[in-house]
Length: 231
Image (cartoon, rainbow, N blue to C red; front, side, top):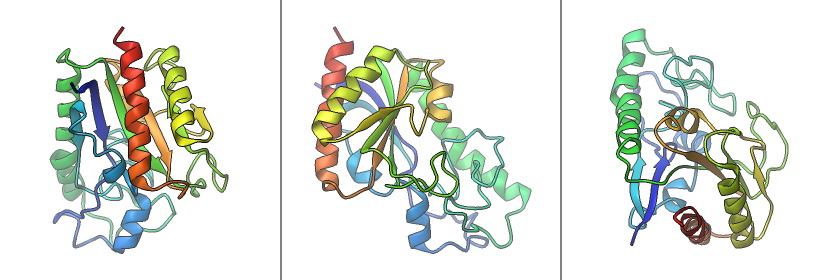
């Protein structure tokens, strides 16, 4: 029986779509470093959850965890990566930017909204990985990070659920798991909590265990949480 969860994995992609190819100057390694390296493997849980939504487009090209009108350097269509590297030369014209949002951002959020309103799920989980130390544009630039950070922006799911997941993840990962520090949750958790409860997981990319073991740890922790909230 699958867990009654909707799992979103918005930053696992590495592809540069054809609209952006003439302008993008990032190398494949830069694209990978700006995204959630390891997320595709760690959150490969489609056979274990009721709903699983992800994408192939790179975060550096379209950031699905940003508001559609966020055009800051690290916004929905970025000028610079989180490592402050320029993404484009020149920056794409307005019609190309809008085409990227129409083709990738809008369908992703439409799917989350429709699934969230279906009544099939007890909880939405937005799955991410994070650099072991905060990047230049992070809220904790240069600082060492915990093995995981889980977040609900103090409102997107009951605190007791977050605390239960913190305990389970800390046990399975064998290290510190924080709540709402350094991340409080992103656009996905804040926006789609209008349909149902959501929380965000940020798992450190530090090599304290292989990705397959991280995957198993996340699955076991989510299984424990699902048993709790389903009662």
